[in-house]
Length: 133
Image (cartoon, rainbow, N blue to C red; front, side, top):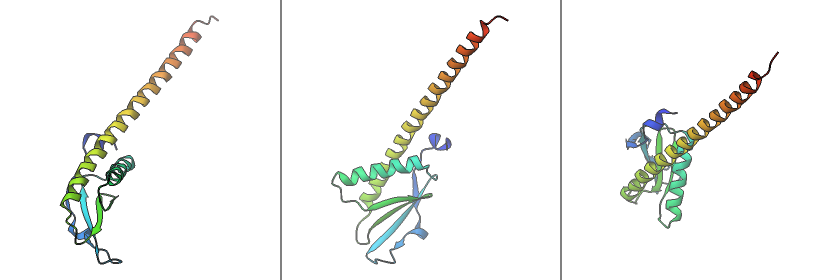
């Protein structure tokens, strides 16, 4: 998805139709947020890693995950979600940055690989060109 390299993923709003109380635990609520694009798997890994690091830093944060073009937040219904959403926005931005860096690294590796192949082909061509029949 090279398009997502140009268009960063963002939270575009709340998805009220997908936000609801957990049927198995009425004290838990699931809040769904729309993303601007369906993120590629590498981006999702970057988001999950950023959210995990934030949770490990001592912040009491609920679970969050990406499902297609939705970002879901699982927390207690009595909790205010403003701070959580602020952190989601920050980690979406972090995932964008991580994904951009990963894509740039992959592009550089592909360029280097292509250059090696070209050099190898040129070496063979030069050596074959020296043969006299």
